[in-house]
Figure 1 (cartoon, rainbow over the protein chains, first blue to last red):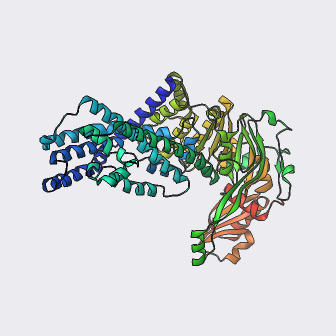
Figure 2 (cartoon, rainbow over the protein chains, first blue to last red):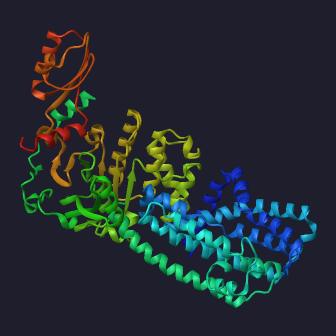
Figure 3 (cartoon, each protein chain N blue to C red):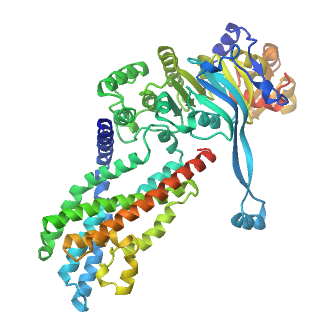
Length: 262
Length: 367
């Protein structure tokens, strides 16, 4: 146990130090995730002229929560992993007594820590510019939001890491991620709250993992009605499914990787 | 350069335990072991190792391209065929062969990165491909072209990760880093970002990282690639010292003959996936490389016909000529060139190991 703690802390601190080398890039990475803010503007405009269950300020809060959820759950492991496989950099890592995935996990977590001050700064700026939207979520909602966001991060990570396994078979594994992203953007609640979707479509979408990735945590934070049990169970279930597929592909991929000459 | 080469040829006696293999020998007769059967205590045992790679084939032209898109046909290309050898604890063995001979493939089978298609391999009593923790703690692989250290951070940070990964205590970490830093003459360099280090310093830092867990078996693939003469010598001296200090076993490939001559008494020569020679280095060169290169800069350009009488003309560019001559004819040829031609500059070198081996293979093993 002590060894695991030491390994984790060392990995985290070194990757954190590495990210601080990119401090100017960090702000751009945060801004790159500001699609929800743009969507917020569009929907607030629409709320003024159309018939929606959401008022202008509701849209503002919802998309602000989407922005936060996205900042906490963003994942890019496929690009790093694909590079490692194609350039053969995975090989030396395979010869260390630690599964290479932990380097990626540590890198993501450290990045999250490095990113947070910028996110909070941007959040503060948002409320200064738009004070009507300011609200304080209840402690329970805040706690549930953080829990959901952490679980969603794990889910998004395992899904993308599973797609990354295809780097063993194709040189363009990231293409899979791009296709997935298309569905993610439309079905996760990123460009519109699920509550404004037609009901029958929403019912179908709820059987996919997408709405639990953005709509679910964002709704918790702003206090919209959500099915907590279904949400948390869905995230866990999808995680387990992808985890199984991931391990299966990893083993097959290892054989393939070695077959092609590592 | 020449001095070293000539010197070692005369210092080492011809060793008759060396074994040269020819293509028509059956795998059974290729088996070679140092001083009888000691496999039970050998740290590396490779027996009839084979590796085949599937390679997709495609007919030329549009039709071929379309067929290739819809239905790929693969054929199996042998990368390594029936390689058998053993290495004893503490030996430094050079692994020679032209590009694509199967050196790296063999190293990868020995480290467990790839699974042999046929045959068995054991390193330190372990089957490498299982990559058990106890095995990984024992070995290291350094690839001259692939770097592991985090580029933007001081090397010390990457070393901290390695220390944690290999469960090295803080105290022991300090001790080992201190010791290796001194051996590698890296004082003050580990706190600078890796990107600021020179190529030589970086390679040494890579070695330090790869050896922090004090492995007993080192697999080194071109550890001095791209380094200048001083840095090469530094790495070589370090490897020798490490080998003596820890009785570590080293198997290395290198294109620099100087690495091999300085470090290895024994070499394995591999060509087209087959083990062609296993024995002392001096025996190999006596057998296979009785050639020298003579580089001449003439006062004026001469046609090829006038030059071929002196030796095999390997290159002719204006006034510059490179001959390949038999070692025994070297002195005679140099005298003739100097007597007959107007020479501005003349240098004699040993051809690079790749070239020597290439020539040998072209002409066959019937020496």
